[in-house]
Image (cartoon, rainbow, N blue to C red):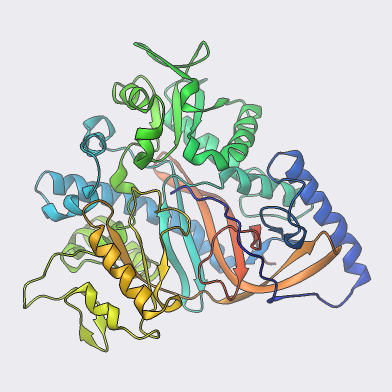
Length: 487
């Protein structure tokens, strides 16, 4: 889901200034100004803004976010495991539609969606199509990595690519090297195109407009590599019986940087989807709303479906995903039979049979998250997310009731909360001209580009917020940096 960089009140209580070190301070000052200058020049960072944050959208780290060789190995392997998960999820949904798997699987994944969206997801034209980019949001914990969700229409690609180039220019070696993100995106696009010299249109909607600058940058970088690229608003596209056009050039492949829940607000969306249906243009990601549902995590853990997942994933991938996918439940208001329980959900060691029972949980027991599953303007970023342990009992009960009531139109999920481990990062305070260390918790966002049958790692964006923040997302006092391997 596309996520926005949100502004929050500044919180500096967890930041502290390292002891002065003249041998380090001057090079750090030069490096930090150079990184900021590069990002500003490329249109990825605004030169004016919040002095306490060092600038307007995030704090610029003085070095990459360091990961170990073992963590890199895990992340490189994870891409193909997640691709296998998407392949299996696609098969599960289609099997459910045709009665070869439980019908309630498709029922959950289609819940609240217009008939037209459901129909596109079931078309033979897109039967085997999967997202070309996979980005999990990973939280490093003391027990290992936890994936809070998967994003098939991720923002941050241009930003991560620009950061990788900026830090590589200063002698760092980010994961994916200098051009890993742009090269990965290009390979993915060419794998979807049938022409040797295709014209790519990256289509950015109003709902996604916060990401237009980084998409403009990415489009320019792709063009420099020889991939003809136009970054367009939907209204700039022309339609004829032959296909889609940008000015007088025919579009061969369209990268959909807009959400399916927003189709009614997107000019010419019906024409774009019609052209894709008629094979007049290749489109990625495909119009499969069911693959953009967070409820896939709940289906992965469902006891009835374990044999299916094991048969399609194998024991190795299954075991890995069990470790990183948190326990998740679809908040369904329907009454279960007297002898039934909600699998693996307990309160005071007693099985739960009704989600309303969780309203009586103590704050310690409320290490749980409620959030929309997908297909909603509230399903991206931290909007719509409620952390049970961060709210009083009445607010928690209210969140449960609202989730139950919204099931017909916007199903919500209950997910086990995993606290990130504490890390220390360094950023540059441009007003005080000094390096500042901050203790916080991190989110790692690796970008995998699907090239044929493989999902290859192109780069990793780290977002670190101070420890008192319950949710991790891009904000004005977050530190953001590319990841690199510690030597």
